[in-house]
Image (cartoon, rainbow, N blue to C red; front, side):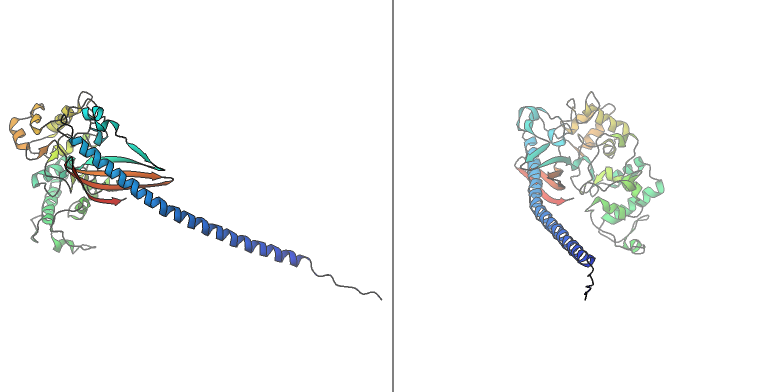
Length: 358
């Protein structure tokens, strides 16, 4: 008698084995990914601390540079040709401590670069009188009717009362907008507040094509020198004003557009000021610059009227006191920017007013 045994399917075991392998592979991949994320997070925490101290080191380096600049007896001014501004530097930069200033500083596994911008190259909007603001709007080519609206509205935004000027606006107007808000009735804390003021459009604030421009650096907007923007008046309020600094502007760093805001200074005189300080090459920030040592030297500008020079002493200066420092830090593949606001009282007193990361 012959017994016939029925063969069991051999493919089932193979399928089960493959499924187990796939499941284990997925679990292993998920575990590896989790470990990679955890490792990266731990590394980020370590790098964050390093980036923090690199940024603070850059701020301290900037404070030292600004302090050393005041110790130079042969340079009683601040100008775009000096080391703090990225220029070649004067006598103190070749025969003193500033001779060894580095634009890129390496510390351990990281590095930082720095940029210092004086805020007295622009007019503080909180100190600007009506005439200065009107001059700015006129030079930008703003329509006369819009100029009256902007002037009155800025006055209403800054003054403490709630009584609107003829063409201005107070909270009653702003509360009826699709997105209502109240008037500040106080000084501007950030220049971007101008965009909330009646009559000020992005084009007036930023200039032509301004809708595509980035916001000002810090609270001041890094200023332009005697650059191309001024050659065609293609600028906005952000290029002329800030919310920090003193009433006086630095005639060694201010742009043509800003210089025109001074009483009695038209475009020809403003261009003459920049040309005189820029030296033979007509370029600001080079080694042949001839900065003004005092506002009284404006008398040397062709066409300058002596009466104007005496009037300008209230609004013009050759020193800057408030500075913005941008420190770009790098460690491994990580990069960040620390922005600090400094106030320089003297060579032993350079204060850090605030700092923030961008």
